[in-house]
Image (tube, rainbow, N blue to C red; front, side, top):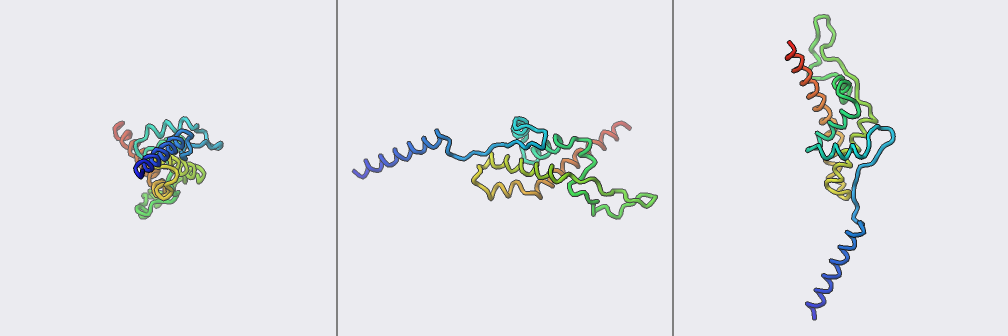
Length: 162
């Protein structure tokens, strides 16, 4: 009798689980559209599929929103590098001056889209992991790396032309 009750209970729970999946009551994350930016949900999903890592996704978004030529001349913070602060040209001007900062609205948009990407991957209920993997410091690092890579390509093309 106890085994029969246990089997009935297990069967009832499995049917409830199937109902939940059928009615899609399980929360799912997806990309959302923002009116101020010229990018569609379909493009976001395509970038998500093509990018193997979060850094690739962020870099692709930055390229799409800003453009490669403008992105090369920018920096994440807009401040001059502390590492090369003492480097000056012969005329006394800074060799590495401050550059244009990425607009805060674009930066926030990229952060939000990375958070949506992580939520799609790990589930929307896992807030701690989403916050960890979509942290603003990480996004800044990803964008800085993309800018650095663009500048390296530019330098290597210039050297090849010589």
